[in-house]
Length: 340
Ligand SMILES: C[S@@+](CC[C@H](N)C(=O)[O-])C[C@H]1O[C@@H](n2cnc3c(N)ncnc32)[C@H](O)[C@@H]1O
Image 1 (cartoon, helix red, strand yellow):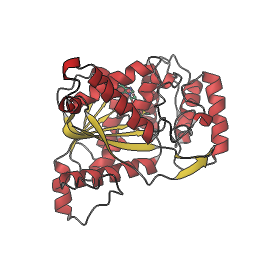
Image 2 (spheres, rainbow, N blue to C red; image 1 turned 180 degrees about the vertical axis):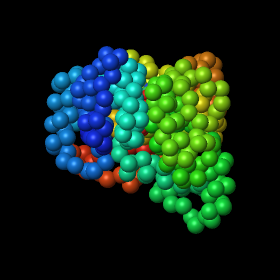
Image 3 (cartoon, protein in one colour; image 1 turned 90 degrees about the vertical axis):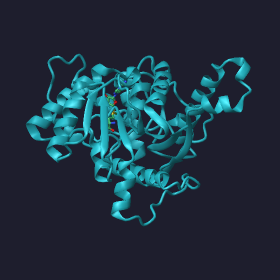
């Protein structure tokens, strides 16, 4: 959940990772760091996992807030997480070098961040949300986004109108999931060249040859195109774990506000932040932009609207929840924001 981290889904990957000689970070360190942050797919014991999280945090001073800090009704977003090596590009370069080697040697896919169930949920929920927006069903987007009984042709037509960018795509499996839902214009970027190589290899192996993959740092993006749908699964989380995490998160919002086309949608999946915290972070970003406007126009509501690029529209409600410390939470949050 936003607040408690679980170990990776595919522990086999950790057992089979090969050592990289160029690696400045040991496999053990990376494995512990990943264990301290990511999520396995089955819904295991929170107490054991919480204890493991505390141990990992102690060992690495890694960047996740203690489970007891979690509160689902926090007013301010928790952007003050401790930094960890998961915020560094060197961590991801070393990780994907290993995952690429494991792919070539054993055919392994690599880490499915937050688990296969979450990935499947994100893909199907995204299709339903986009279909509803395409059909002008804007009134009830923040309910259970059920899909009315569209024909296969109608869905294909709806999905073809959505250009999709997955930022921090990693192995690119989310894009494969979206392709299975009918999306056709698909691009994945990651600042790690190893991730892009892995994503390309997997897409080719799995028959998704039309997905584009590019090396790009989302904080200094070279992309000149805008996309109607921008996906982020775990990337803002990773960016927030950089030693300059709070500053990098501000850069993130500046950058994605340029990448999402007007009227488009940004969907963030996070295990470090609740839905309320993400909404609050967007409000803070909007407010900062508004404050930066000339004082003369600052009373102008239209100017405020223009300076507020993102508005909450919906979030996934189907993730399992549990009680912890008197608060109800889910381990993952997936939240959609509409770009004005
Ligand atoms: C937790 S992984 C998630 C990968 C993938 N989205 C998934 O769900 O499997 C975070 C990803 O973000 C990438 N990343 C982190 N910071 C980035 C940045 N500034 N620009 C592009 N990619 C970044 C990392 O290389 C890594 O692949």
